[in-house]
Image 1 (spheres, rainbow, N blue to C red):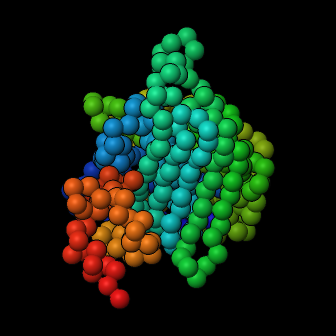
Image 2 (cartoon, rainbow, N blue to C red):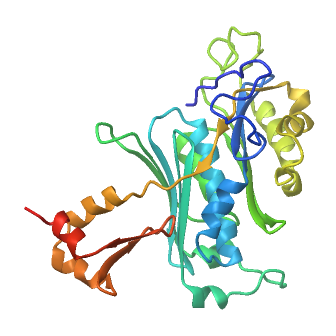
Image 3 (spheres, helix red, strand yellow):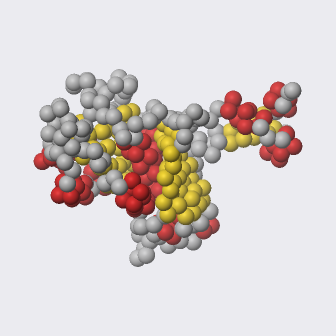
Length: 329
């Protein structure tokens, strides 16, 4: 589980550039002191807008991918790991795939694969019967993976897609598989022509208690997690509106105090987030080298082999000289 680090007094969170808007593109970890329940509040502004505007995604697709990015940011913050956290859906609906991943360093990227004709055939948003998640994603699964490198074993969880929202499937997994109480709300929308996404995650673990909870021995007053504690936390989380989550003029600490002041909310050092793809020319050269040269000849455009990254939409071109270097003995 995550290791929460206290803020350095009244200073800016470690790792944030001076002059940067510390209310946007961050994860704010916090603790409800009365119950030992941990939380993360995620705000994505330029980071999510950068990811979504790299492709001409229809609004329903961009909305879902924005939510996925907020989910990935929140869940990766809750986990103590060094590497890559990936959240992915795969189904037989018009949006066949959604992928969002976050590194332990706070780098985000995402991609959506969709069938434009099938998506256009769905009822338009705002009609009496707008498309449901089941109509958009179809039957399939949601999976999340923690990859800490080649020397470690990957951890993966898989659950069948279901429910009315993306979070429904994820919460079902935690209820059935992890036996960890988890509450999560996410949202995404265009505000002033730019995309925003946000999320609020609450989670507890079986080992919370006065002797070994996150506030143990520090005067935080962490208590045994009870059904009453959790129900109260869920009721308070439910009072958080979509408008509040996406109101980036509302300071994060003010929102958390507004929601949880009766519980005693303590904040920790914020984690900065940034949109950053991991593709590179060197990586693509290694990939091409692993394939038969005859196979990649089909990728030629105007005499060059062109490879485009699905995530950032950047194209890499390889002429004959470059290919000779790649395939040289």
